[in-house]
Length: 106
Image (cartoon, rainbow, N blue to C red; front, side, top):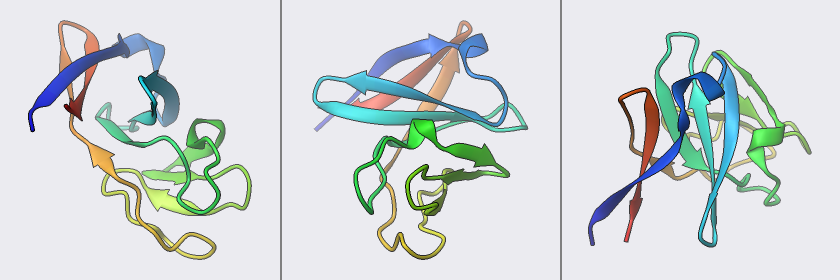
């Protein structure tokens, strides 16, 4: 298996402490920009009830699911307490020439 780098968006399309939904093929991803201008990516759906995380609230490296307020550390994918108990899958992200790129396994 190899990683394929997919162009997600321009750096300026994601505000600091915000999240962007990105769909590619059958998969949905959530791409985050931290207050420190670092970029991260996780699976785009909450592990509790498959709700789109991009509709949630981002604060202090945490994404909060909009349905039941489940929280994850988006840097590691770690579930931070009930009702979520399954971690999110994370994906490598890099920035090149002002573009945010996401690595997906093909």
